[in-house]
Picture 1 (cartoon, rainbow, N blue to C red):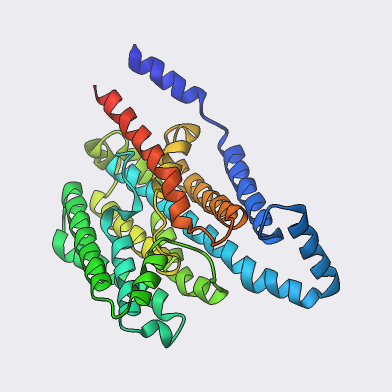
Picture 2: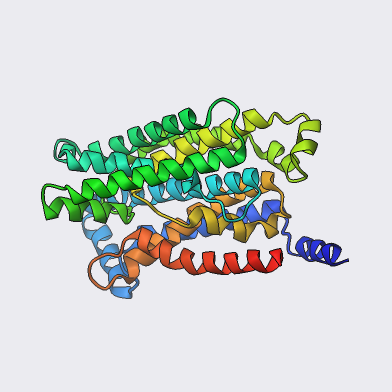
Length: 343
């Protein structure tokens, strides 16, 4: 009786799926519009930009297309990647506490970027850092594959991901400890906090191929994840190849999250918070949660970046700091809820 009552309550929270997607897309567009208008929430900032637009149209358009628009596009890519990856991992592991950093892609990408910093490659090219992140993510994924073997269990993949994350984190700390100058250390730490500032369309093009490939791999897992909600044996009886599903999710998350982290730094909790908030609204259907979480993650990152840009009194806050301040209390509440249900 209790389970039936809970199921009825869950159904009552479900929204029409097209309406939900339209609402999330609209929320993201509003955040993008706010990001294009001005750097601070004030009538003076808005009027100043409008004056610049009327007096020096070329400069104003350059600000829009070369400074603000790439930041918005990259924010949507990173947020969508984190939201989609979190939904896929939570559906595959059937655990609401799973998030994209679980398989080590984020930590390995961060290590690759730190190595580029450490050897001074950043002074040679502005793309050395994101390129190092992409290479690091792929290397981390390769190590994961070597650790788990050909037909691993879910627990094996999780433990291997924890090992890759721990080892990459240790090497990152070692690089920071042996950095040739305090300025290099400060630069690395600043990057690790996560930010979309000073990004250009070149960074977008660098990250986009791998993220799109990862999206395509994850987007095709919806039906299998729906079947998996009733158990692995039932999923097999429905024709789901669990081995293929496992590798699609591992590769999809590794490629897309690694590429995103390589250009933005580490931005946490998005892949944890968004799927959990949206799951009741899609009727607890993973196939619907995937696109909803992608749109929701993009919207969350864009709004967080708006807050970072508008509300920072002096030096700009880092985006990863803001998402951590939002996500950490949410994670504690979620953990308390999971423990309460377990009792």
